[in-house]
Image 1: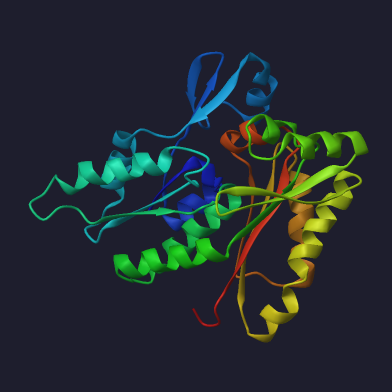
Image 2: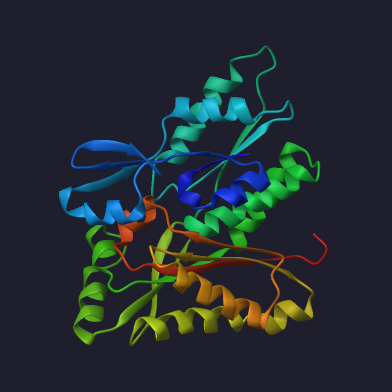
Amino acid sequence: MVTDSAASLPVEVVNASGVTVVPMWVAIGGQQYRDGELSLEEVLSRSGEGLSTSGPAPGELADAARRADQGEGVVILTLAHEMSAVYQSARLATGLLEGETPNGKKVAVVDTGTAAGAEGLVVLAASRAAHDGLPLDAVVERAQRAARRVRLLATLPSLDYLARGGRVPGAAAWGARWLGLNPVFEFRKGKVKPLRPARGSRLARQRIIDIWAREIPAERARGAALHVAAMHAVEPAVADELMTEVRRRFQPATAFVGSFSPVMVAHTGPGLAGLAWWWDDPGA
């Protein structure tokens, strides 16, 4: 299993799942750094120097797939293609790999359609399927099912960064700023959808919990399993609070608290906090 660092998986989760993570690239002031070389605090403090991101090259992904392949094939799971060219790089990497042996290496690429903790949850779904001994096609199907169901809701002080990158209308950013509201948005299927904002960061996070909690009665009734990730940007206490609120209402089958990657924060700006989740079928 191979993914990019935009999945924001904590080191302990990566080690436990056996996932190979390929760093994205962050460029500051014309100098390139692998994701993780600089702390998120340093990346944010230097954002005035000019900040951009890019995905790993096809050769980097191909090298990671070679290391991850244990003879049964490899799945490469990527950040939404609308956010980065990493999906296209992964497709090119498969061409490099498939020509290396007479029968070709078995490699599949899955565009998760999302980012951050939501992407991480899709990766973990695929990893569980692989550890269960499922064949490559079934692992891909599990990943695609998780990708269709996963949701990522987040809040931040303003939509200015997202508007600057063309991911939300400039009028939405201006209106939220003028009214003194904390935006709440959903990132799903590669697109940012603004939701009803809230007055203050705490109320915005509570709105996210409320949206998630509305799903509990129906999912509990059908015996679904919850997979959830709480995310923060330099404020772990915020993510811990979100996870505490989740656990108070429902016991998840999979849960982790992690930091948004600089790749995500470069597009949203500082102050980001969010919750990602999906509900699995009973017994799956």
